[in-house]
Length: 442
Image 1 (cartoon, rainbow, N blue to C red):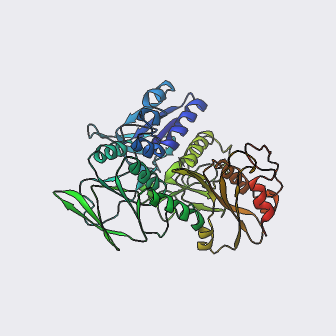
Image 2 (image 1 turned 45 degrees about the vertical axis):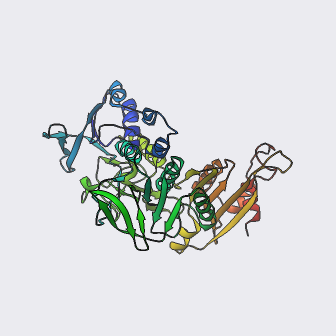
Image 3 (image 1 turned 90 degrees about the vertical axis):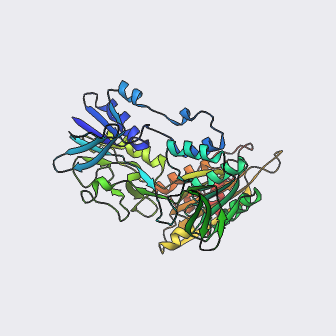
């Protein structure tokens, strides 16, 4: 069996390693257009901030390690076309520009995503950079050395982590986003108000509810960012606007969402026989709504890649869907969320109710304790839990993993009130905060 894999980051690496172990007789060939594989992009901000000193720790595999499993990894090789009817790939060697063809029995597409590049005047000026891969992170670190004013465009997870990293390095930092709130896809207003105030208290300038319209430059280098509401000095601009699935290779050959995300079934099969896909190139079932959605997270990618390998010869293990569970640390605050926010539910015209708990995470007789803000969202009619968010200076983020399981298993808010959680004064109160949410829900 000839297995071809296009792309080798999170999903690709998981698929390759597991396929090599499950099918030792298979011929596995990997094509990767970059000069490295398996980079943990979620660690970029830690690398930029200097928390991670050795970037090699952000890689968890290599062509040499894959070779030990019998895998042939072709670095700096770009697959330029896929003939899915005849199972033929056309590949360009980026070192030599030579082109050649290869065939496959099973094709695994893990081409990931790429940052959105807006068509804005001045976008080609020097010192306007993206933030996605290892080479980007090195470029950011190098250019930041001589930058005084740093502008980050995009207030998602990466943007927020970067502004914190730049502020910690003594830069004048401005964060711009077209939305009125930071992290609006993950958190409701009660949570973003606190985090925005925290960022401002550290000297970070927030310019929200405005869109970048132009970049101005001096001697070919960016000097100002112009938006619908103002103009801001910039020696360095990082674009973190969002991501698009990297799926042009299969356009018109497999079913996709409107944004180009490949639709896969619960066994990671595309609509074309013998083509599987995983990771940021895919749309997957979002359990709170039961619909396909584009949720590019590394956790989703590694699960999907592992399942591709398991289901390559026969459908043996279903993907359980995702809740889009994620977390972030902003200065002293530990924040996490799972499933729908109240805003997202409103956008989908869902009838939901919420319960909010604002309490100390452990008994007040303990020498110290921290306040916790917890919000749980549930369906008004069925009372099924659909989402949750939590924030505290104590690390309570694992509770979102618990509620992720509750959403996946279609538990109700009433059942949550009586789930068996332990009590120990070091960690919680006799009624766990999740129990409290279930008990206090109307």
